Image 1 (cartoon, helix red, strand yellow):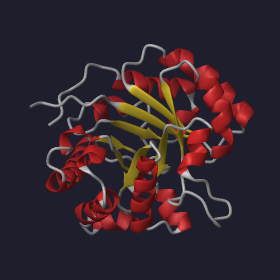
Image 2: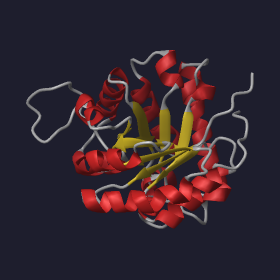
Image 3: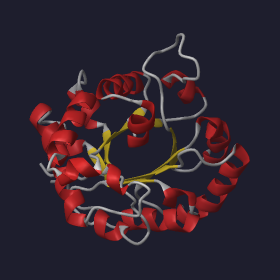
Image 4: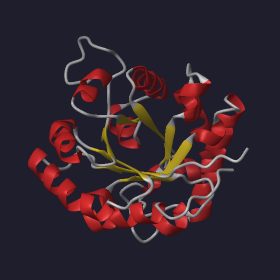
Length: 259
């Protein structure tokens, strides 16, 4: 049976904007994406969650956090649990972004634990995987994304996996202005889907896999036309209303059937 996957465009604001600035950005963006037929999420800094929740009320945009801890509670100074971010309006959360792995020593095992914690709390995880520049140049891309994907899937049920979102983010393309070619991105996302299929055959066609390496208003149409790419995890362009809207509109074109 052919599965049609609804595309998702998720903005990752990273460490930008105060609550008042967040409200202003949302107010400027929502009118530009009011006709979107794809899924849209805004993943904001924790301090912005209440203001963003207030501004997004009544819209079709999903509010997301950028990180959670794997524990429900405890002596983890400075951390936030899944229940905490959910209590102020978050419905999804980015897990294992490359910047978390690079700057905060987040391991594959931690990503797996956070994924399970998010699902247990009813949050939709957007789980990030991707290779470093040296890993791509040495031909290790498939090995790296396979290892990371398997760690994220560990301990999940087929039903949990079928609702999962994975974001492929080639680390060498994040914030550098570089971008994988349409074909490179599609090929690697196909590898990731193959990993899911090998472990969860009945769920693989339902998993949405996004591209997260410097997608912008100019390159989005080509990337989103690829059969394996189900949307984008958007960094810098998510802070520019017109650019974010252009990507959302590109993803709102007629859907292609999943492979």
